Length: 357
Image 1: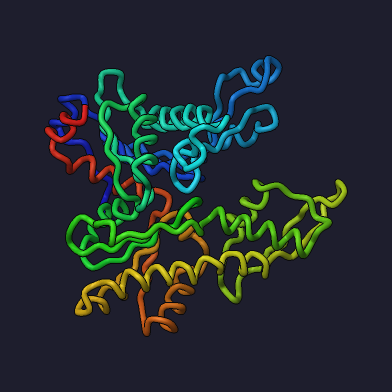
Image 2 (image 1 turned 180 degrees about the vertical axis):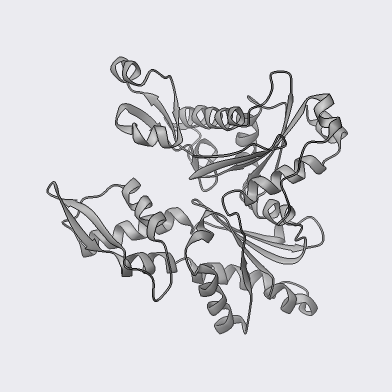
């Protein structure tokens, strides 16, 4: 894996801080040219009233702190399918649109603050977006980011992962987030629209499926969306021999242990077939001479890549349907997109950033 780019003497003299930001539905990460790397769950909370404000002693809370104190907060998860909710079709005129845009602006401001910029530094940022984000989606992210950085550009999330690893030729990237799974075909040039696919089956859809399965099999169990998410993150696996997932859930106020092993495995497996469908489309539409090479260079990234044995399950499905395939899991799924975005920021010429200001 390529090391995180370090600041040059010229950058320090000119007071420029480069940021690579992976703005995710569930988690937002930043890699900075000063060596700082931070990640925060994509939650923003505002005290509900004077009592909660007195209790919390803050005007806004982020990430785990917001989740922990959510009963005292108006809690926002301002991103959906990898973009700001207010930019989605049918959301622009909704009552929550303005609040979600403000929450997204505050979230970007917090992740920039965590990168520890100096007061006199210019901040140039590259932000990853879903492969097939609309112009409207992109404009909303740019508007939110410009509140906190001096220059900003957007790039496809799977492209940034590949760029960060210097895998730019005959590679298929699978970037599994919470809101989307993005596929990108790299072949030695900037990927075009035909080289990219965005699937809406991803981490959140696994959560919804698991919740539905638990409710159907154990209707007496009580749980929240956040509890299901934590169960998945702790036990996620598609292995036939996965460790037992014994989980305690309340039943009429009393903790009861449930074996959720099969339900978790089934919910996690549901993303495999759609991913291979997408891979098949990108392989079949590629130059026939290079299809075999492409098939055997599949890169698995994003938070969803941490599902145990997912690489093996995708490989197995590819063998059955495509006659073969090789899947490699990235070493740093949480920071893969942010590292790549930072590398892009560093590699862009100074005049490019000046034009964006």
